[in-house]
Length: 137
Image 1 (cartoon, rainbow, N blue to C red):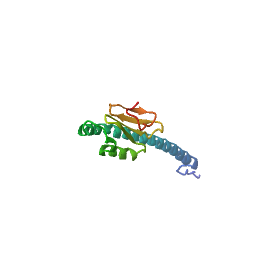
Image 2 (image 1 turned 90 degrees about the vertical axis):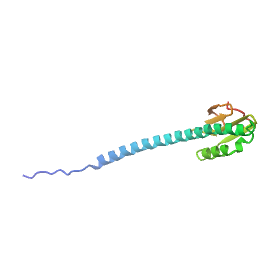
Image 3 (image 1 turned 120 degrees about the horizontal axis):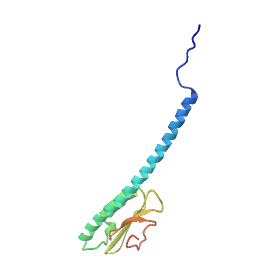
Image 4 (image 1 turned 90 degrees about the horizontal axis):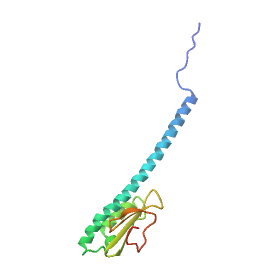
């Protein structure tokens, strides 16, 4: 009597199903990683703008209690470079000697901006600052 031997291994269908499942899982992971990257870039933009405030206060104290010229200072230039490496759109405005306002577009949305000003505001805005803006709205 002849004994039938079974071949060990996977069928083509089984392999295709496994490959399809791996492809779906990889797509989910990639989407989540890109979302996390964008959120991290938004946090970096907020951090750069928030770090601008102490520099502005030091500039104000060392410049006879005036923000005049602050937007051309080294601190503003550092923030500009850091933010523009992530997302272009950094703006800094010194309308009066007693106020400044800085803003940058967030990476996650074309209609979302982060704004900081000399009165201590640090918040989200729906539009960029104008050349005559004296504070975050």
